[in-house]
Length: 400
Image (cartoon, rainbow, N blue to C red):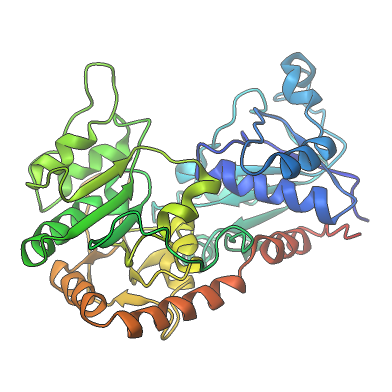
């Protein structure tokens, strides 16, 4: 039987990948099903235009998020909410962007999980197996979970909104420049140090090179940021400033890059990023690991940008022949941390990146064809398609 409601136990906002993921499921429920999304945490719907925001807000139930005391009686108790609840889980099965809803369960409980740590403990397996189902964000994650002994695992990747992320003309804001776009949270697994080393060398060959990036991290003291100590390109990452904020300019200075070759943003409104991406001649993602498919890379491909992408982990789900420029050379990475296993991670070759950048630089028409093929592939992974599949996997389609 289809439920009338589905609960979301993480914050829905534009400030994280989880927030964007949650919004697009909520959006699908509101516009295409009879099911009412019930958000149990902070809910901020400034993702899109006012019309869409109004329509989605009207159908979304937020009373439990607005009144934390109402949730208190369900926390760590035998009382369950009378509808299914989706739970966001990351490395070590840690709840993501949850506070008031910690310990709150539903009639059925489904774990949506994106992990980068290949070590899954027996205790984690036990907890995973208490969920009605476990939905992994990539084929790689699904394999890790099944091999560890997690049952009832399905794979469902993220999506893109083709109404927003699609090929369109450039605004030509950077005339006579060769624009490289890169985006993602600044952390070791995202490989920004690899990108900067490649851009440093490429800019020496082609001084008109400009790196256009959106690299931010609100938690530069986190484990994922501190893992940059394992980078082969410097001894230690630039520390946070005295207020605890990421120092992006220090990063560029460490690679001898100045404002003549960098245009950087620590954050950018999600629904406006297509305008940024479409200024680029090429997109570059030398990520060492992705538990999911890398939403920013998918969106760049959806915009028709020829995309250079590392052939490892979750990226494997969006690499298709002739639709991107894969980085085949992926050497194994070892992180000396007893609690963290980087098996499956890959270190991309700077030389291979340079070869691909040079190919795009010298062959604009051929590169454009690759970009168009990538855009067509990403249309097959629209949010509407992926959200509908997710609901089918948890037995709750509720289509109108």
